[in-house]
Length: 502
Image 1 (spheres, rainbow, N blue to C red):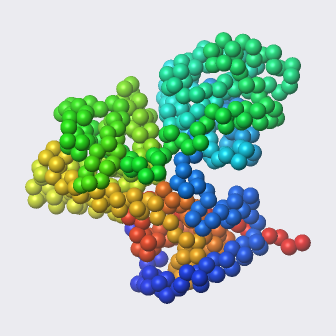
Image 2: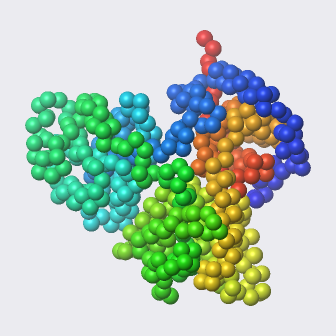
């Protein structure tokens, strides 16, 4: 906790006060606050959020996994422009300069009443180096995590050597692909698409992302390509929960998988970096079935890695995104390192639930335990909410303790708070600890709702920007009242001004 956070500390029993408010009263208060928002300037996304039910309509209904459509291609062929056209709004940044998009950016789209996940990617170039290599690799990860792909080319420029390289990459994935010939703004330019047949991906779909020409027909084809439920985005409801084993090289991830599976499922060696590709295994621990994913050890920052290590790190990130909970393993015989902390932060950025597993516990003495406790207090204070287990993957000691830790983390990750109760929480909290005055103004929270879970994500409609330490205070009190064990909490703001009266 920072010194600034101390400004918001209090001894009030918020949970006890909230317990005295019945659900009906909380719902009435929330409806009154929601009605008051009509006095403020709201955009279409605000209204979609507010019109959703109190369990969060921003997510796929009933836990269904939305099909995923990735858009890939060389730099500056119009991928982000096509994303904006499909979404019907200017969501992705578009410039004439190549390379504006670098990361994989995910949006929710809808066509003909069917929602889907749309992934915009940076430009893919073969033999790229430095940052461009990281951008290209992220595009490859996006393809791996997609159900179908739109490969966008510039119809005016025609097929290039780089386009042919992209085709080879896409063929290796065995994903359904449609070739999109962009920048065909009128009938005269359709003659340009003839040579694109040579790429071997079938008939090119002529579109103009800028003007919308041909995009509707393309989306009709996309709906025929996509499955009703994603095969990659999330595991099927009721199936084994997916657990990613992550950590530095040689911390015991493969040993843990082997001991849990009761067989030598993966190669274990004292040589760090034996595992390159993620390995899935369905296992049973203490009567509960899980799907464990052993991953390559992460040595350094991805953009500093080279060769096989670089791609192994990317595959580890992809496996993490397909998981629901991550077990970060630490070698307790070694001090907690910057690399360990970076891996924990990677899990937080991915939005997965988190369990901390301290391996090789049978190899440390009392003195090392004291030092370890001090390191945990100093270096892992920002994830003090994560369940912690002390295990020995080699001997199997205390592996059964993973089950309650994983269950608690997933329960926290799935937790939802009804809108009425959440607004009662906010009202009681701000009454006891209002936001400080900044620049002569005091920001107020007008209304709050939980936009989704996995991880729990809250949206606060406010009259001004909330200090970061005040948002951390809200997160901390949410944990005190509702638990949220083992999961990051996201608190977003939407600053809205009162409408001008005519």
